[in-house]
Picture (cartoon, rainbow, N blue to C red):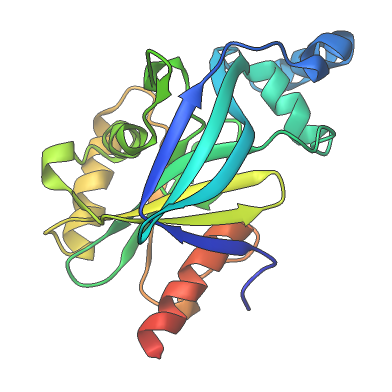
Length: 242
C-alpha cells in the first residue's frame, strides 16, 4: 500500500537561508501572474506572502548522528503555487516543510482537513505549512520551531503541551520533502478531537475545516491524504505490527 516515497531517518536538520533569485519566477513571470489571477478569482482569500523553498540538500554523518543539511530561499506564494501547478518544472527545487505528527496518548494520529479558503482545500494531512520568513533567524531556518508554531496555529495545542521525538522522518515524494516529527500529547484521541473542534469554532477563519483520527491502516484515505502522509503512516503501522 505504501506509495512511491523514499524515507530517511535523521537525528537533526540544519537549514540555512540564502537570498537568491529564482530563475523560474523571473523567466515565467507573465504566466505566473496570469495563473495567480485565475486562482484568486476562484479563491480571493489567497495571500501572496513570502515562503521558503529548498534548492540544495544533503545527508551527512557526524559520528553516529545522521544530519539533513538544507538550503532555502524565499519567493512569493504565487511563484510557489505556479511551480506546483505547472508540474514542478525546475527539478532542483523542492517544497521542503516541517510537519508535526500529532499523536494522542491512546495511539491515534491527529490530521487536519484544510479549509475551503486555503490553497489545499479538502486535503487531509498533519499540521504543517510551507516555511516562511517567520522561521528565519539570521541565516538559519528553524524547522523544529515551525512544527510547534503550525501545531498551535492550526489546532490550538501549545508548545508546552507537546513532547516531540528527538529524531525526524524525512519523506521524499516528488518535489515535496516532508520533514515529519512525532509530537506526543497527554490527551486521548477523543479529548483532542473535542478540544480542537472547540478551538476551530472559536476562530474567525480557522485554517482547518475539521480533524481526522487515524488509528490504523483502515483509517487511511488515499486521495485526500497526500502520498507522503499515507507513506509515513503506513510505514509506522507496519513497524508497530512487526
